[in-house]
Length: 347
Image 1 (tube, one colour):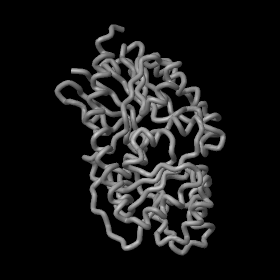
Image 2 (cartoon, rainbow, N blue to C red; image 1 turned 180 degrees about the vertical axis):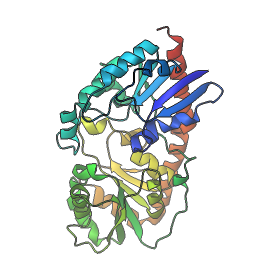
Image 3 (cartoon, rainbow, N blue to C red; image 1 turned 30 degrees about the vertical axis):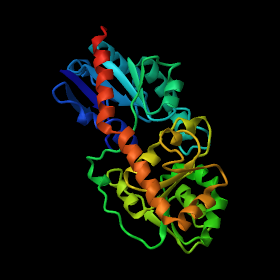
Image 4 (cartoon, helix red, strand yellow; image 1 turned 120 degrees about the vertical axis):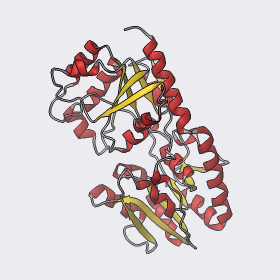
């Protein structure tokens, strides 16, 4: 029996996709426990950690905004002789335009993640591109793909109907640069017989910028929002959407992201129009999606307005590929094998 301790708040989207699936590990081979943090470690932490064979966490060991406890936690982990696994869903090198860049640099979060990668016995990542970036810090890596947890009630399908084609962007405030990239194309869509929807809007400057781009500065009468939902239920937004837009500004940071938007759209029977680049091209192709460059968004949406049958065809094809290549149980099995291999190595 391999005993695994997972450090997670269980309240973030990253943890939901990357760490929560540990609960599906084979109970005959793995015993899994969860804890929110190891920050400000007590003197008896070493003894408590000795109960576990593997300790896994996302990005960094210490998340305290005032004090970096990474070194103290590492000392306890070494004394307890635990195998340490760190998981990354994207790059720690945030670009200056990112909303969290200043916070990351001020609190040293980027350097904490570098320390974690070098310290860990193994690293799991979401994509091959990200794995290639991590290899210079840790050679023992494994790609564990993101998957929609079809056992989670928030992914229950009860598609609502609409006479008009519902075209949506579903995402958070950190996609301002992506949406700004296609703002002129979005304004052109006022002439189309569609409802344009921003799923995930919440009060705030960055969210309002996205809403402004999508509504053509408030002039589009066919624009509406779906307010942001908690990480445990936001998947339900897809039940009120036919086509998802997934533009992505191209740089080193964005190429380290995962194809998650395409996976969610496909699982929930939505067609997708996405930027023609990785990570989307890991799953999207000409048979299951519409892949476009900067100025192809209006034409792509129009083609689906003119041919509603194509929406259904693309949605079904994408769903088939997502279900075939992104099965959560298969990815959990890969993680199990990675941990078993780690535990066979002597300290």
